Length: 148
Image 1 (cartoon, rainbow, N blue to C red):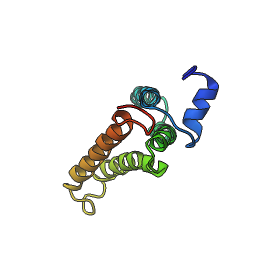
Image 2: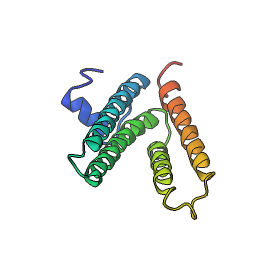
Image 3: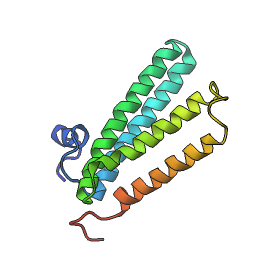
Image 4: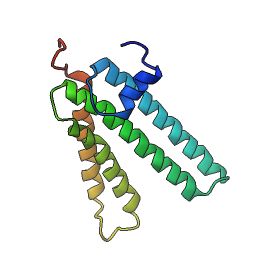
């Protein structure tokens, strides 16, 4: 891998789902995504406490950034699934599970009569199981051409 942070490499990793990447590249790309999301989360927390911007606007920006980073995660994971010989669409499972989990937690207090309390645990467990499966499948298991 030449120049991980070069513009052409970043375009390849984060802008389409074609191609293949190895485990090391997947871990590096996911690390970049996680660090970016942590920075966005911290900025949202700091700005939300300061009261300079309305809470609705900063929450909308946080949600937009989370969706953008989820799309980047899909592109990187789709390439890794291609390398494993599996359908790229499997890369949608983790972002979808995380958004469903966040939605249940966000809507739960206001829709207490529609969403039972135990559903939080069910959705959390499902999201955790999908995360463990994704990390094992993409970060641990070798690709078709790799040695274990």
